[in-house]
Each structure stands twice: as structure tokens, then as C-alpha cells.
View 1 (tube, rainbow, N blue to C red):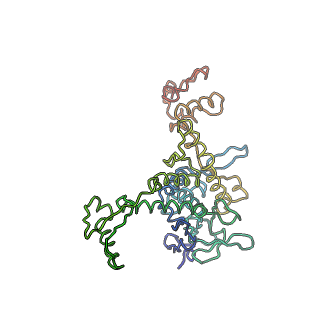
View 2: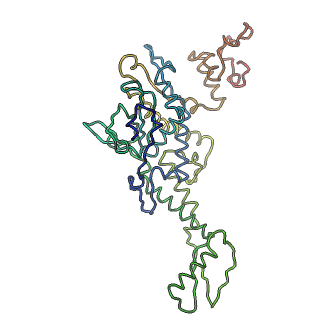
View 3: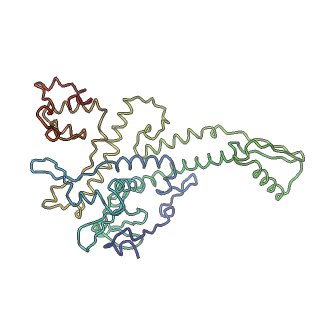
Amino acid sequence: MGLLDRFQRRSADVPVEFVNEDVVFLGQTFAGENVSPRNSLRLVPVWAAVQLVAGAVGSLPLRVYKTSSDGVKVESPKHPSAKLLANPNPVMAGDEWTELVMSHLLLWGNAFILKNRFLDGGPVTELWPLSPQSVKVDRKAGMPVYYINGKGPYDSRTILHIRGLSFDGIVGLSPIQLAKQSLGTYAAVEKYQGKFWANNATPGGVLTHPSRLSPDAAERLRSQWNSSHGGTSNASKTAILEEGMKFETLSLPAEDAQLVQQLEMSALQVARLFQIPAHMMQTNASGASLTYSTTEMEYQHFVRFTLRRWLSRIEKSLLRDNDLFSPVGLGAQMGVQFDTSDLTRGDMKTIADINLSLYQAGVITRDEIRAEMGRGPIELVADSPSDLLPVPSDAQQVPSDALVDGSNA
């Protein structure tokens, strides 16, 4: 029985059947290596990139809010969708769910979420991410329809679809598929390096015999030689040559001595693919000098142009789903947004300077500053007037350091 045959029951009880991804994605590359979204995770740079971006997105609180008539956003943690996004299903917490959805977007360019209901026509009670390789997207009357392991079609009432960059607005493009040639080259270099070290990091050689050897004798000699002297476990063994045989080492091509550089350049290509600063991937193949200022600027670039794009895509996809947020009535006032304040924070001195400026301008109160620091409101911690925080006659006299070391808090 397929997954959606029993979508009114818990989806966790129904296994998802996987297809042969290498065949579906036709992952053969010019380098001779198969590359697919799933097996690309075996490449260290891809794994690092996906962990970095998906982990960063998964760590951000996803908040549901209501916009009041005067334009103020007020968080609504009791909204049904807020509770659902905090605990999407019985086996996943909200951060795990978001991280998995983001990893699907990075690898396949699409994230498909089953909207499970316990009652037909009732509210959505669970959100289950589906393996993108088990979902096929088609178009019917101009709208996308979905087939799960060949079963369907199902529409947006059952499937929540979040897509990345797309040519047709229906199916997102897989970054891995588009960059499979570069990734195939990296995989080929890794394989070559592994074989290079398996051969004791020694280039191949030629055994010469003064007399003529039959093909069987030559093959037997080659097998015996590799068995006795090939691999790291046989390193530095003494070879005994008989009957006038000689061993001639082939010269090591200069390219073989540049394996590390080739891998570094491939890692840099992966960083470009996912729009991640090179230093965040622990690579500096470009040779550019790094300073605190440049790394900080690159980090802000990463947050603004890499993460923000994906966050906006997820937010808008959730918001346009009529089962999660009704487009009419009270639902039209609701919104969903990732809280990125932790990502954009600076050091404590910078935070204190910003808070002081906002306080002096009357934008925020002392209690709001205390809330950011994880402290309660003044009236909740004050037992007597002497416990209240001092209110300076001139706010300009309060140094920002006081907000850092706590002398005025």
C-alpha cells in the first residue's frame, strides 16, 4: 500500500519506496563518475556546504505573527500553524524539519511536503517531507500535479511544494544536476588519489624480462608482483628479481603532484555553486588574504544574499498555502517569518552601541533591551524602588560599555 493510499493515517507508518536515482538523473559525467543529489553527499565539499546552509536555516526560529491595523507585527504562538511548524510530525522537531526541507532544496531544487489529515477535509495535522526522488511533477490544466512512486495525481491540497530556481515555475532545478560535470571531476580526482595512495604513492612501473614471456606467464607475474608489493600494507618491502628481470619506474607526471590543489579548486567550485564564502568552507584556493573586516563582509554577504533568498522562498511558500494560512478574513492578517536576529548580531560592544542609540532615539525601551539579553522586565525583578535601574537625567551620559558589563542592568 502506497504512502498516499492511507494519508488520513499517520504517514510514518507507510514506507516510501525509493527509485534508482542514478538512472533517473542520468548522472554519468565526462569524467566517468556517476553524480546524483544523493550520492553527491559523499563528496566532502558538498556535505560541508549542505550542512552549513541547511544547518543555519534549521537553527533559525520560524515565527508566525499577526499584523495589527496599525502595522505592528505581534507574534502568535497559539496559532494552529505556529504549533504545527514547531512540531510538524511526531518524529521531527521544527528545526529538524526545516533543516531537512532546506537540504532537499539544495540537492534537488525541490522540497515536497505531505499535508497529512486525520479526517478527510479536516485541518492539516502533520507535515511530512517526502524524498524528492520519489515524486514526479506534471502539469494539468496549467497547475502542477504530483505522483508519489507512480501513484496519483495529487494536487496542492495534499502536497506543499517549495521550489528553488525554476525555468517553468513548476519544477525547481537541481544544483547538483546542473553542476554534475564539475562534481564528477572532483569525484574522479578523489578516486585517482585513493588509487595513488593504494599503490604506496608510487607511480606505475615496468618489469622487463630478458626472454620472451607468454601472455599467461606475464599476467601471472603481474598479479604476483601486485600482490606482494602493491598497497600501503606492502610499503617498503624488498623485491627480489630473478632470471635477469629489471624494474623500471615510470616518471611521476607533474600533475600528480598537484592533487591537493586540484581538490582545493574543486572545493572552491562547490562553494560557488552554493554561494558560500570560501573561508566558510575551510578553503582558500584563490589565495586571497583574509582579515577580520573581509571575513565579516563575506559573512554578511552570505546572510543577505544566500540565506535570505532561501528564507524568503520558504516563508512565501508556507504563507501562500491555503491550508496553513487562509487568504481571507483573519488569516489575511497572518504572516510567517524566520527570526534572523542572531545571525545579524555583532559582538557585544557593537550590540550595546546599537541598543543605546535606539534607546536614546526612543525606538526601544529598557525592558526590550533586557528581553534581548534574556532578562525579565524591570517591574518583575524590582522588589523596592531602590532595585529599579537608574534612569539618567541625560541618556547621553550612559556609556555603551555599561550595557555590556551589566553595571547599569
